[in-house]
Image (cartoon, rainbow, N blue to C red; front, side):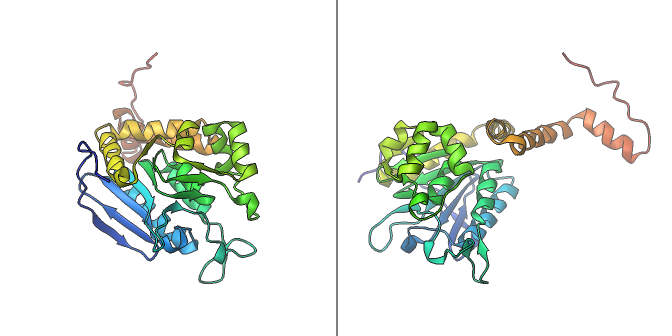
Length: 286
């Protein structure tokens, strides 16, 4: 397939860390790329995968030069199949969760969900092939989502004795509506890219060969805008749906802004200098 002539040139990616299940790259334009690297398992995650994803996203959070993350899965597999993420790896699922190398059952994907949700950067999902089960939830929690024409979305939890009663159910209902969310979970059907676009589950659908290039285009557009405005907007969107945790996130962004003011500096400096603070220059604005 020929790429559209107006698509951006590929970025010069540099490895940012070394993992077993994850590939993590960044470029000089402030864009990072995180990919699940288990194509033989349709990029299903095990505890190690989630630990490495958490580490990569944490590194992105702490890097002041990175503003956007492209999140995807490596593909195709040896059999030609594509997947963003097929959810939890059922081959390591034990009685209490997914069993790690030490024999401990874990549900650490919940930590990853919260990390992606609260990351003060924009996360763009690039979905090629299957985004199923827990993989569909990870895609859902990204700020923006682009799907290749071969993308397939759906839930399998009730079919395999599992469910996600947190973001996977509640936030899904906010995105696609209560009726559609219940259909997705109760019937465990699969939906193609165009169906996902129609229900508002993705922002756009492009040919598979153009998926990353289109993601780069979107990322570059985001990078042209105010970092503070973007992080406060993300917190504001989350505050409407995430209860006190969402309000805490929004309040934290407001605190970041306040700490930069002369009024806040006066309070700090007066305490350190052991004198009464003088806020007389700070107006009581309407």
